[in-house]
Image (cartoon, rainbow, N blue to C red; front, side, top):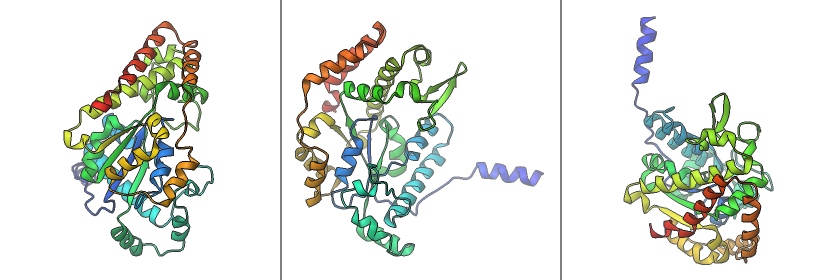
Amino acid sequence: MNGIKENVIQQKQVELIRDNTLVSDFVLVDGQGRSGKAMLGVILSTMRRIEKLRLDTVFDYIPRYYFLGKMSHNAAITALKIEADEKLYNTMISRGVNFRFDDYSGVFKDGNPFRYLKRLVQRSEQSAVERIKKEKPIFQNLTHDALHTASLYFDAFGDKLKIIHMMRDPVENIYEWDKRNFGERIGKDPREFQLAYEWNGECVPLNAEGWEDDYLSSNPTERIVGMINHFFKINLEGYLNLDEKWRQRIFFLEFEKFVVEPMKYCKQLEEFLGTEMTFRTKRVLKRERCPRKLDETQRERKIKDIEEKLSPKFKTMLRKLLEDYEKRIWESF
C-alpha cells in the first residue's frame, strides 16, 4: 500500500510537457453565438494555407475548467497543445472530418472541399507529418466567448496563435437566441452542450455566474439579455487584461461592417493572418450573401419585440448594453 501511495504522490508532482508540436499557425474564430463566426470561417477556408473550419468544443471547455479551478495550468496548456496537434493531424488525413452537407463545419461548406476527398486516399502517419511541415497549414477552430480566457490560449500557443473576435449588434444576437429558445434549453435539452452548475438545487449555465438568482427568477428572454450582456463585458475585460504583445494578435471584426464591405475586411485579414485570397474567395462570399444590404428598419422592430418581454430592470440592462455597443470601444484598442 505504501508503494501505491508513493506512486500517486509522484504522479501529482509530474510536470507535463508537449514540445513535439505539429501546429505552427493557429487561428481561433471567436465571438458570441450567432455572431457570424461560421460564415467567416468558411470564407477564411478559401485563403491559402487555412484549413477547414472545425468546431471542437474541447477548445471552449479546457480554459473554463482551468479558470474554475478544476484543472491545473500545466494540464490545461498541455491538453490544448495535444488537442490542437491531434485535430490538425486528423484533418490532414480526413479522419474525423465532417461530411454532413449542410454543416458549416463540414467539408462541403469548405472553400476547397476537394482537398479533403483527396486526403481520404493519401498515405497517413509519417507522410502526413511531412505534409504538415511542408505546407505549414493554418489550423482553424471556432470558439464561443473565448476572449475572456485568451490568456490561457496564449500561454499554450504563444505567437503561433491569432484570434479573430466577431462582434455583432446585440439586438440580432438576442433575437436569434430567443428564436432558438436558448433561455430555457441550457441544462434541460440534451442537445445543448454548454457547461452548467447547480445553484440552490437548480441548474444554471456558466454564463449566469454572479447573477444566478436573477437568472432563475427571469423569463427566457430576460435570461438571454443577461447572458449576452455578461459575456459582452467579460470578453472586453479579458482583452484589456492581456499583455500588449498579445492584444496585437487579436483582430476585432464587426459583422455588420464585414457583410456590407467584405473585400475591404478580407484584405485586412490577409495581412493579419499572413495569407492571401484565392479565386475561391469571391465564390464563397457570393454564396454567403456578401456583400449584402442591411435593413435598418428591422432593428427597431426587433428592439420593440424584445422589450415587450422584459421587466423594467432588464429593459435598463438592454439599453445600457446597446449604448455600450454603439460606442464601439474596441475600435479604440
